[in-house]
Image (cartoon, rainbow, N blue to C red; front, side, top):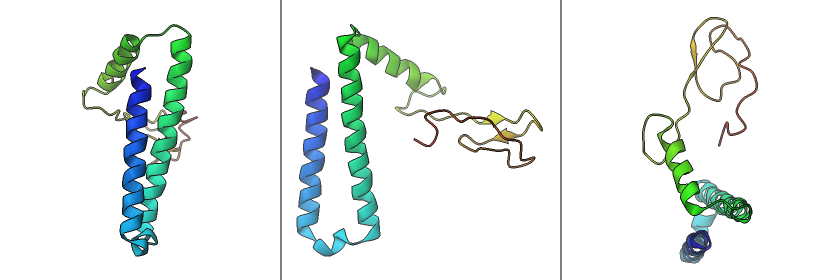
Amino acid sequence: MAMGFISGYVLGTRSAGKAAGMASSAAQFGNSESSRIYALDDRVDRLTMVIQAMWSLLEEQGLTLEQLQARVAEIDASDGSVDGRVTPAAKTCPECGAKVSPGVASCQFCGHEMGDPSPFAGL
């Protein structure tokens, strides 16, 4: 299972780097920027674990690594740029026609509520 090896390597590398950083300077650990970086690193580790769990469930249902890779490529290209990230498109306000930034709950011009955001908003 390639995903297990990859996530194990990523988690192990991050843990080793985190331990080395903390050992090199205890004072730096109290720095708010460092604390935010460690919190973000922990969040990425948790997301990696959740993704690995989801993939293992999908594998048990018969999906293949090739299907996963094809879907990743499809989603990557969905915003018009194959760059390893998804850039959400602006919405058009149904009330005034203004472009509204992704993740914004209401139109910044007329105040119209844009409706329920995507479950992935803010990620």
